Image 1 (cartoon, chains in turn green, orange, yellow):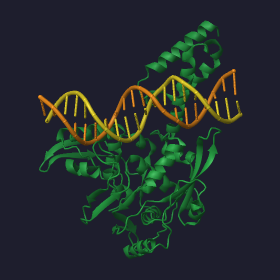
Image 2 (cartoon, rainbow, N blue to C red):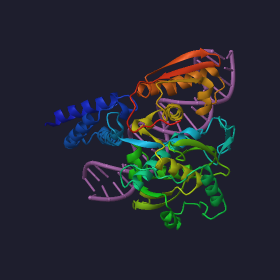
Image 3 (tube, rainbow, N blue to C red):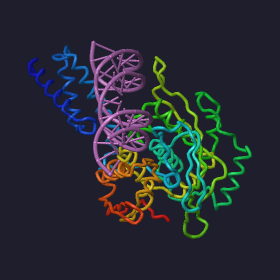
Length: 398
DNA sequence: ACGTCTCCACCTTCTTCCTG
DNA sequence: CAGGAAGAAGGTGGAGACGT
C-alpha cells in the first residue's frame, strides 16, 4: 500500500468514526471497528505523523473495549444474572434529589402492614441494586460449586427463627461491621470464617454486570452499598408447609446488607490499584434473609442489557414487572411515583418522565410490548402489556 | 517504542424546580 | 400546564503513564 492509499484509508476510517452519533459505543459495530483498528495499526508508518492518528487509535481501542464488555449482554446472548426478589420488592430507591440533603434518612409506609420503613446513612439507586444482583449471583455459584444450586437450602424455618436470629445479632454475639477501608485488615480473616461469604475480583464483577467500572469505582460502590442501613418489611420465602410461601418479616433493628473487606491485588508502580479482591459476608440480618431467599430460589433473571437502561426504567421494571409474569398490569400514576420514588409535583412533567424515561425505553428494549395511558378514577393510569413467553427458570410467586 | 489502561475535564441525559 | 433552567449522575474520549 502506498502512502497515498494509506492516508486515504485513514481519512475514511476517521470520517466513519466521527460520523457515529454519541454515545459511539452504542452505534458502532464491533467487528467493523476491530477490522478498522487492525488496518490502522498496519498503516501506521504512513500516517503516524498525523496527530489525529493516535487519537483515533485511542478512541477505537476504548470503544472496542466497551463493546467487548457489553457483548455478553447483547440480547441474543443468554448471559444473565439473578436478582433476589426481596430487595426488589421491599426497597424504595433513594437517590440524591435536587434540594435534598445528601444523607438524610428516608421513610415510607409499607402497603400491607402499614409499618414505617426506613433507610439510613446513604442512598440506594440502580447501581446498588446491581451490586446486590452480582453478590447474590456469586453466592449462588459458590454454594452450587459453579452452577446454581438445585436443592433449597433455607437458613430460616419460620418468622420466629428470623426474630431469634435478629436478637442474637443484636446482643453482640456477632461482631459489628467495622470499617473495611484498611486493606490488610484482619476483617478478611474473620469474613473467611463466616458461613455465607464470597470472594471475587473486579474482573468477576465486570463480567457479571457488563458495566465498565474501574477498580476504585467498584470498591466505592461496594463500600457505599454495605454502609446503607435498613429497617424495613422484608419478604422471605418460607417452606413451612408443602408449598413455599412468601411472608413478610418486620425488622426491629437497622441492618446492613452485608459486610465486606478487600485486598489490593495488582498495584501499578505509580500506586494505582488495578485489581482488588473482595470478601463479602452475608452475616447481618438483612444479609442472611437475602442469602435465605437466594438459597430457596426466590430470585428472577435479568439480562445484562438491563443495566444500560435509564434509572427510572430499571426501577419500574424491578418493582413491578420482574417478579411476576402477568401479561397485563395496570398501574396508576401515583403508585408508580411512590414505588420508584419520583417526586416531581408537576403532574405533566411526572407523566413525561415516566413515559419517556421508563416506559418507552422498556418497550424499546423489548421488556414490555406496549403500554396504554388512560384516565381512571384515581387519575392517570398506565396499562402495560407483555406477551413474552415464560422462561423455564422463572417461577411465579405470590 | 508502541499499545493499553486509568484518570478526569467536559458533555449528555434525567429529574426536579421555577416562571409565566 | 408547558417549557426551560438547574442540579446530579453517568458517559465520553483525550492526555498521559505503565508495561511489554
